[in-house]
Image (cartoon, rainbow, N blue to C red):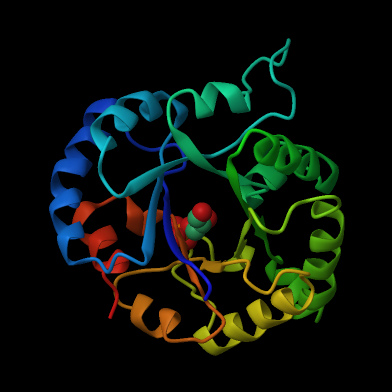
Length: 241
Ligand SMILES: O=C[C@H](O)COP(=O)(O)O
């Protein structure tokens, strides 16, 4: 049986005080959450240490939003895997489209980051997806297939999560139709060697569409941006019907 993983990606939002306030509103809702659902929060680096202490003993796991491929070195602005694992981080987002678009992330560096994460026991959440222009040109399948082919070279598929995030659906309110997301995720799965890799959908996931998204047979969870920033909203998503 495939794991269900619901992850909140806070991107560059929330100070420590704001993240602590979020938890006091969010954690009580988890009493209703079925235990087979894995819940992950990926805050900014500055919140990780504090949240790690607050979440100790709770069922919420911590994820980072990036990891470098070296264990240390002169890489200003980057973070190394041992720095994350030391404070209890278990997941890391790799290859998010915002990293690819704004910070020069390529399939080569995505592959290096995935390897480093796995080497140190982190579970990477690899993001793939097409732009609006690529979708309109009928290139969705080929773009995603190329990303997977390059990103997954020598990657252990026993410790991996994939997030299908159509770039045109991120932060736009323009969700990919759930059956279409299901179709693309099925195609992603057909390209993997391990059929048990959980594959999430990401892109304008909200309390009012999560039930329909999670009703799709290929979709194993969600990577949630904006709607994970507010405790009640993220709680409704985690507690989907
Ligand atoms: O990592 C999360 C995605 O970029 C989705 O963001 P969004 O839910 O705000 O569209």
